[in-house]
Length: 305
Image 1 (cartoon, rainbow, N blue to C red):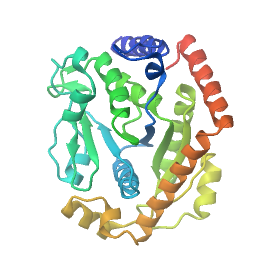
Image 2 (cartoon, one colour; image 1 turned 135 degrees about the vertical axis):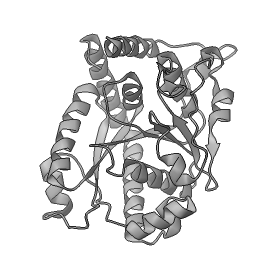
Image 3 (cartoon, rainbow, N blue to C red; image 1 turned 90 degrees about the vertical axis):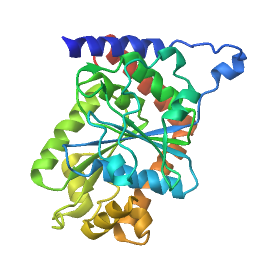
C-alpha cells in the first residue's frame, strides 16, 4: 500500500509539473526560460557492478572538459561515492523537518559538498534519521529542478527499484546508462531491467558493460550489443591497481592516469553523451522529445509509472 501511495503521489506531482508555475517578480519571458542543465542517469543491472565508479568517472571527465557538474547519489545508506571521494558521508535530506517552502537554489547550494577537483556532490537517502520514515515525496520532487539551475550537467546515480525516489530520478533523466558486468547472469538481468525501464520511461538508454573478470567477451562490444539490443559505446576494462590507487587518494581514476585504457574509455563515453545532447538540440530531436513527452503522459494517464 505504501508503494501504491508513493506512485500515486508521483503521478500527481508529475501532472503538476506540466502546469506552468509562475515565479514571483519574474516576467513572462523569465517564467518560460528553462535551465540548460543536462541530466544524465546511471543505474546498475544489479548491485556491485561498478555503477558509482562509472558515474563518478564520467562526471569527472565532464569537469575536466570545463563543465560544471553536480553528482547526486541516491542510496538508503548515503552510498559509496562519499567514501570513494573521501568526503563526509552525510545525507543532504536526512532532517525530516526540512521545509519545502525554503527548498530554493540558495538552500540547495548549502547542501552541496565541494570536492577538490571541482565536482559538486550531493548524497541523498530516501529515509530520515536512518531507516524509519521516508523523506517527503514533495521534497524529493522539488530538489531536482533546483539542482538543474546550478550546473551544466546533473549526474544521477540511483538504484532501479519500484519506489518513488528511484522513479523520480529515472523520469528526470534525459539519457540513462545501464551499467552491467559481462557474464551471462548479468546480461540476463540487464535484459530484464531494460524491459522494466522501457515500460516506465521513454528516456534514451545506453548500456555500459564493466569487464571485472578480465576475460574478454567472445564477440566484444558487438556481441554484447547484439544480445542486449541496445547501443554499447564502450566496454570498461578491468583496472584493479588504478581503482586501488584512486580509492587511496580519493580521486576518480581518470585523475590518476588520464592516458590509461579505462580513462580513455570513460572519455569516449563522455564524448558520446556530449554528441547525444548536441543532436538533442536539433529541430528533429525537439520533435522526438515532444513525442516522448506525449507517450509519458499517456502512460501516466493509464496508471503506469
